[in-house]
Length: 107
Length: 118
Image (tube, rainbow over all chains, first blue to last red; front, side):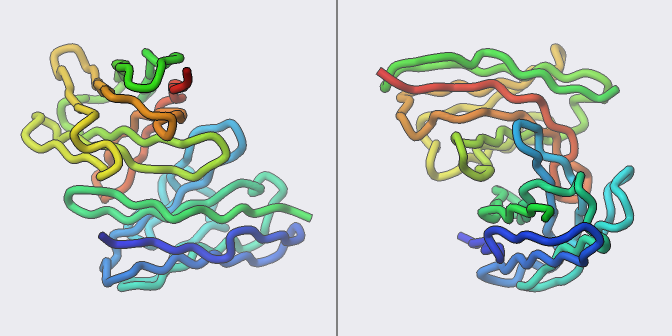
């Protein structure tokens, strides 16, 4: 089974900072990776699909990159509303695997 | 507006059974693969099961294989998850989620809570 490992587990940054979250796959997954944002008590929200495509309605300060085994989610100009936990997720034909999550806090 | 509404959660004893339902509206349900995803208290997201648009393909996480059964009724725009032999580690919020055309999940329900406890 493919494992997805996110880093860091938590991060704290100031408003306006550039924030980067990394997701590493245990083997090559091409670009079959999505990113989600989940705020406390809320439903996950799709941000990025196919590693780098922005979902409709998602602010352009969010971007994704990578292929193969290493991927990044970048928030360019952190906003207070971005405080949340972020998950990467790999799509396999017969399963999906989430990373363990990265909690982002705004100082 | 695209919407998914789960129901059927509750408190059940270990070894018991529960059936979750998810009602879909605002999109052509029978065009999409559907999923169940769960989240234990204070933990991350865990994919549970998927079903193809015409029920031809069913997939399960190893943690629930042999105990849970996913099904759908396209005529009623509904998705179900039959959960048997429940364990404490099955305690979680269960979400139904629609598969995005590009290998993600783009529409999520609000979730239904399952608690397995004696």
